[in-house]
Length: 413
Image 1 (spheres, rainbow, N blue to C red):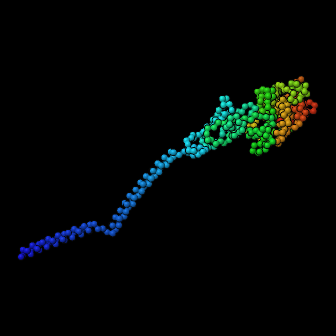
Image 2: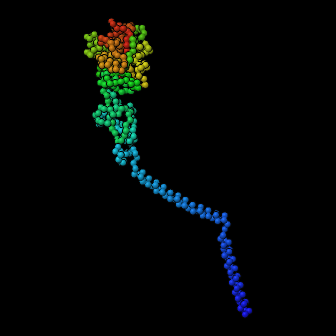
Image 3: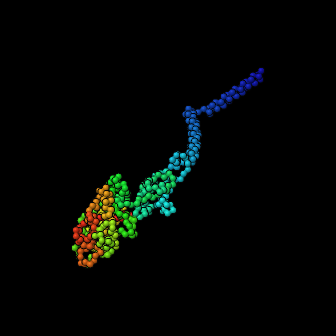
C-alpha cells in the first residue's frame, strides 16, 4: 500500500514539474517575442518605409522605361518627318535640298552669256546680289535694269538687289534698257524712258539728276565713245566767263582743244544737222589740257570750275551717288548735238522741274583754231553757242558777250 502511494506521489510530482517546465518555456517564448509599444511602432514604420521605397523604385523604373519608350518613338517619328522648309508648295512631304542655286546670265544667249551664281536657303527669302557686286557691265548705250526668269522677256521681275523666294534652282536673265534722247536718269540709277515721262512723278527719296541729251557716234564725242549715252545736268551755271583774268599771252590757243565745223564757212558757223565737226570733239579732257598748259588755278576759269564742283551745288542730288563725278563742259560739237535735240530734252527737263535750254548762250570747252592773232586775251578764243539762232562764235564776235551760261555733260554708258 505504502509502495503504491509513493509511486502515485512520484508520478504526480513528475507530472507537476513537467507542467511547470512547459509553462516556463511558454512564458519565456512570449517574453522574448513581445516588445514595447514604441519598439512595435518603429518596426511598423520601418516596414512601411521599405514598402514605399520599393514602390518608388518600381515607379521610377516604370517611368524611365516609359520615357525611353517615348524617346524611341519620337526618334522614329523624327527620322520619318521632313523639316517644314522641305515641304513643297502642295504640302506633299518629300525629300528636297537644303539650298538652291541662283544662276545669273548676262544675256539671253546662254552660249555667250557670263554665268554667275549665288546660293540661297530653300523655302526662304534671299536678297539678290547687286549687279555691281556681280561685276555686270551693261553693253555700250544700255543700262542694266533688273532680272527676269523668262528668256527673251523685257518685263522686270526682280530689280537689282531685290528679295527672291527660293523653291527651286533658279536662272535669271539680265534685262537692259537702251538709252534714248529724253530719258530721265534718277539718283539711284533707275531710268524713266522718254515714252513714259507723262506718267512719271518725282519722289524725294529718288530724285531726277539728268536727262539724256544725245547718243554718241564715231565723230562726237569720239570714235571710242560711239553708242554711248550722254546726259546733261538739270542746273546751269549763270553768267560765267571762260577765263576770269585779263591775261594776254602769245598765241593763246591750243590745237589739242580745237574744234570746228568742217563746212562752217558755208553755213555761217551753224550748229545745225548739216554741220560736221572735226578735230577734238570730246570735251571731257579739255580742262586737263588747259590746266596743265596755263598752270593756273581753276578759279581763273569759272566755266570749268562750275563743272568740276557741280556735285556740290544745292539741289543737284548727285552727291554720294554713282554720278557724283565725271561732269564736264561740252565741246562745241557736243553742244551742237544738244542743240539739235533741244525740243525733246526740254520736254523732259520741264517734267522734272529742271532749267530749260531755251534760247540761252552757252560756253563750250573748245577753242577757235584761228591763230594768226597773237598777244590776245585767252577768253577771246573760246567758242560759245547760241541756242537762240543756232550759231556758234567767239566772245569777240558781233552780238556775243564774254559772260555766258554753262551746261554740264556726263557719260552714262
